[in-house]
Amino acid sequence: MPRAKASPTTFLPYRLRSAMTLSRLHDPRTTGRSRLIPTNADMIIDLDKKRMQAMAAKDIDTLDTLLAEDLVYTHSSARLDTKQTLIGNMKSGATVYSSVQPFDVKAQDLGDVVILTGSARIKVSSQGKQQDFGVRFTDAYAKRNGRWQMVVWQSTRLPD
Picture 1 (tube, rainbow, N blue to C red):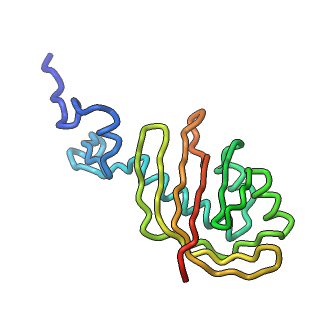
Picture 2 (picture 1 turned 60 degrees about the horizontal axis):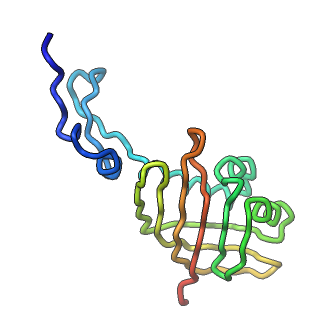
Picture 3 (picture 1 turned 135 degrees about the horizontal axis):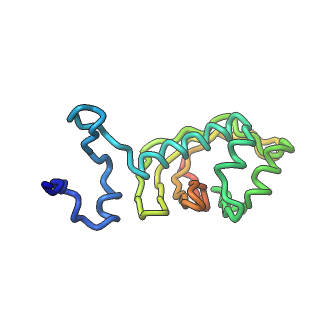
């Protein structure tokens, strides 16, 4: 029986293969056509957009799924939150996000951890005070028990 032909990426280390932005793989179901397979990096960028939309929509169920129990959330004001305090402040109305719009987001795929860096425009009411500002952020997601969750957020306010 003839041996299967190895793809050009077969002998690359796992981390190098997973760090590629998009992998072009052969899929026998597509009769020889290639298809693009999103990497962890692409998936986490989309997942983080979903989290930001959930914050603006006050979608607590989605946030409960996406945020790790041991989350460390450092606001641009240097205030620290846990998953429980972040969600609690949103539920009580002490913090109301009306818009969180990310841009220039880049990802580093480290296997079971993906680090995001980028910027975002945030519109929020905190303790009754309306704010509209930009931040630069670092964000990390970890894959635990087969599920990706945000474990850390750190942001720095951009000058006006």
